[in-house]
Length: 193
Image (cartoon, rainbow, N blue to C red; front, side, top):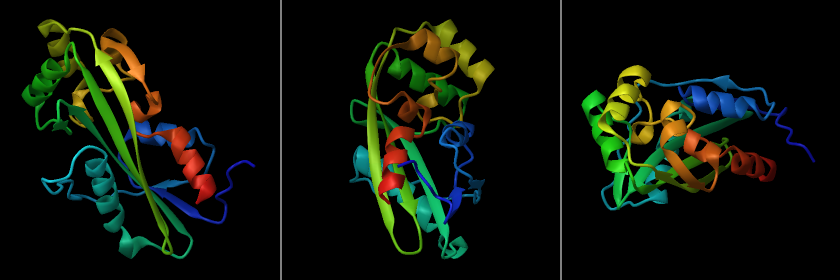
């Protein structure tokens, strides 16, 4: 049976053009609604999947006052994990370059936490993918950061952009998860919701 969300007013709470593109691929009607300054910090004792799901839930909780009986809210957060260190969105171009230097020649994890929320229930899950980067040269890093301005992306890169074409040697797991929304898993979770 195909996914039918016609009984819901679906809201995607994200500024990400990638998440918008991916959710649009499911052929469901939805609205984008974003709130300014949602806190994306998390307790220091959290690790991996728990960080991404914690932030996705925090984002959902910020929308409580906007929820109607028929609202279905989708929130998500993506992090990059390398050697136990979390890479979120870079604070500036220099930070973005340093992130890419760190990822160069190594395998890292991309984890997206997703939260589906209605007034009656909530489903939270995380999807993890592994990405191996080739060795990047300094001029390649400089070019990508100055041309593509990846300050809105965890780990300072978009897999669907130029850097993905030249750097990604190997992926294990969902490509769309690396883009920011594990759309196949989201579809399945929405059907079971």
